[in-house]
Length: 216
Image 1 (cartoon, helix red, strand yellow):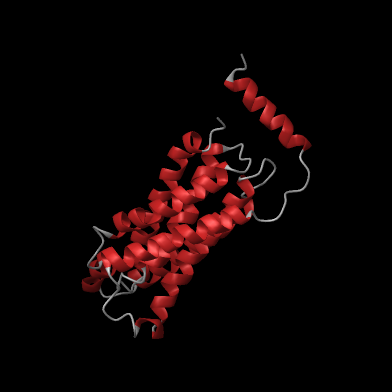
Image 2 (cartoon, rainbow, N blue to C red):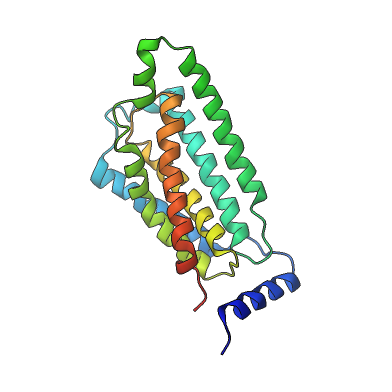
């Protein structure tokens, strides 16, 4: 009987002989689109849109949040697309995610430190810090499930990393859609609570990845 170690060694050996990675899998794109649509429906039917949704796109902060979370989602997609194949490297996606987070955190910290002391805690905590990460996780679950299902149909070999990448992608998309509901408008809030929600989905992906993506 072949042991799990032997199976892993076989997979790694096949990876060494693999040719160039093919184009982005249509299954992965379809899963991302379906998961994102499910999250949008959840916002519309469960959380509701922010009261000023018609005016919000005219504000810079609305787009800043959207660009930040969308870039993290893009970074996650780049990682999961590479890790869904034996020879892929997530380096580019990880660098993008780290750079985007550090930039927003630095700007948010600068504004926080230069704000009036009486305004600092409202800037950081907002009105919804208790529910923000939880809601992002809830919206990210259908995206994560669809993404893991698509990745499983490909050829991942680093299952925990692939699961974490799927979580980063799912969290980024979920947080972007969550912005249609959330009226918070400070960089400090987004850097802490939005990022925490995305990090929780990423962690969840890493935990379930070895089980959900295991070859059976």
